[in-house]
Structures are given as structure tokens and as C-alpha cells.
Length: 115
Image (cartoon, rainbow, N blue to C red):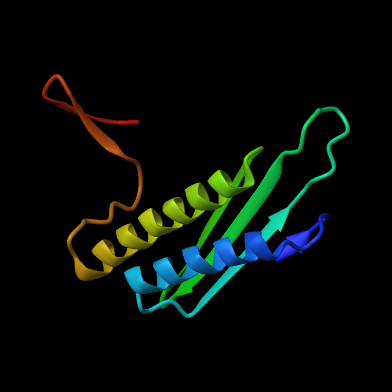
């Protein structure tokens, strides 16, 4: 779970709480891996943490990677992003949202324009 830094029981407990919330939101999670690291950066002052979350569900693996100086806010933001992607995946599987393969299309002045 930790790379380039010492393990922290408080951070582990925070991650476990977020993982249980995510599991309650979607019971079909097969695997959830979390890596928290302190990358080596010689040109910056202060510590910038990086969090990577991989959530495996049937038919998809959701990956979220974010970086910030506030570790606890970073963990919460990353899990919120994973939950949003998981929610979108569930809606697509149920057929609530159409999946557009190819270029996005927007209407401009009555015309359809690919962008």
C-alpha cells in the first residue's frame, strides 16, 4: 500500500473506511488496490503525495491516479472519483446512459459538429 514512505496505521484506517464505503455503494467489486506513494522530487519543496486506486468490477477495471500535498484530502478525492466512474459504469451496464463510440458530437447552430 505504501511506496517511498513509512506505513501509517491512521492512513491505513482511512483507506479501509473509504474502501468499505465503496463496497457498500457497489457490491460487485472484485478487487480494490490502493497505492500511496511519496515520489522523489528534488525540485519542489514540501511533500506531494500520489494515490492510485484500481477497482476491478466485471467487464472493467477503473483506475484513478491523483496527486496532492494533503494526503487525507487526496485519498477522499481519489475515492470520490472512483465512485463516480463506478456509478457511470453501472449506468452504462443497465442501459441508463448511451455509450458513444467514436467522436463526441455537439450541436452548434442547428448543425452537428464533431469535436
